[in-house]
Length: 232
Image 1: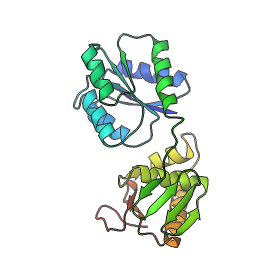
Image 2: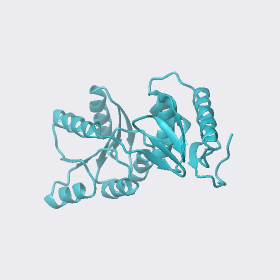
Image 3: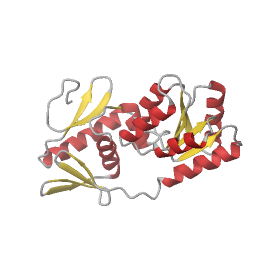
Image 4: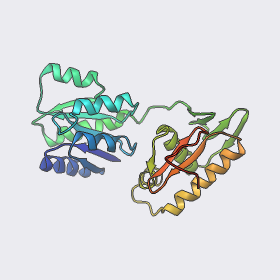
């Protein structure tokens, strides 16, 4: 699993990343709130460790933005501000856990395991975008009265695009999320599966298209032309 550490104290951020790594996770680090929010929007992470006192946006502002944008990644607030009102404010803003400094390394790892477990049993509802519905139980794509079965990679790829709505996802993020961090998959593999999905959307007579933002990544469009990208 992959963890995002948003912490401006570089030695502590690296220590937290190392602790996450000891538990078999990989970690990315952002040293300010604005960068952390951009990373969080990628949909790549299974948990976020978020400091409150940050340059730019503070942790509470980052957390509110994450939850307002319907990002459900579990978040552990990590801060020296241990006042009860701060803890309540953080939890009410959408944090899953609030850990105050100083803390024991074992406690941090246990809390991280706990928030990552919370998302596992969630059963997702069917996803909808424009005129299509993706059945999360049947791995089936529907448009009106028509339906078509998706293989596992097609399903994961389309699911990721639908969860991110019209936001652009980079090719690297898509490959890491769909094929895995240690995969040998290349851009050619991704482009092949994009082609497969486009063909199935066409067979369903859907208005939804998979577009590419040149040199950036892919996004979904509900049949309306966009100046930011084009189809390949």
